[in-house]
Amino acid sequence: MVLKIIKDFVKHVIGRIFSKRSNVKLGFYGPPNGGKTTLANKICKDWLGEEMGQASKIPHETREISIKEKVNITYKDKTLTFKIADTPGIATKIDYEDFLHFGMNKTEAKKRAREATKGVIESIKWLDDMELVVIVLDSTQNPYNQVNITLIGNLVARKIPVLIVANKMDLRKSDIKSIEAAFPEYPVIGISAKNGNNIEEFYEQLFEMVK
Image 1: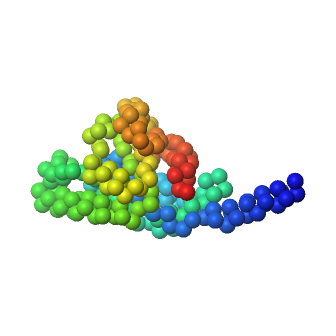
Image 2: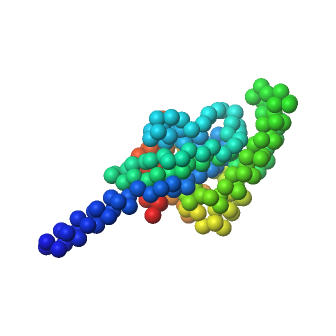
Image 3: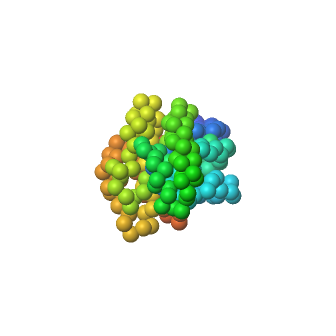
């Protein structure tokens, strides 16, 4: 009995020593306007007291990869240190004419399209540096219209663990089950990055996947 108590105590101490991993490389990927930056901002606001980037209703607001180092997240007495990468929205085709509807002139729209295209290419390259990827989808939209074959193919080839986030669950048209049906091979968690709904469940799933 005494020996068991000693073993349990040693196990507890060792667990606490190694409970804080350094720089788990976490990438936020997904289509434009799915809520990647909003979720990254929520996490950084919770644990650093500052936001990571600017979110916008205009597609491809994020056109360069943003990095936030040493984001210490604690869940149930365990702390993990993340290096978070918020990436540009992954799209197969980026047409400058789409930006004209948001009040941009032709020159601005073409510049934004070029930058967004470059951002997509860089995002795929950065997968080589990722240990865990969170794909953020808009749960009010058809999941199959948001899936990018290039992204999924690269994740499978690199054997990177993936967590699917069905964002915007606070909206009436949210359909998390459609996201689950589209990605039966991956864990899916419904959240509202904007309002913080289910954020604790998100952290729980994140910690479960980091071994």
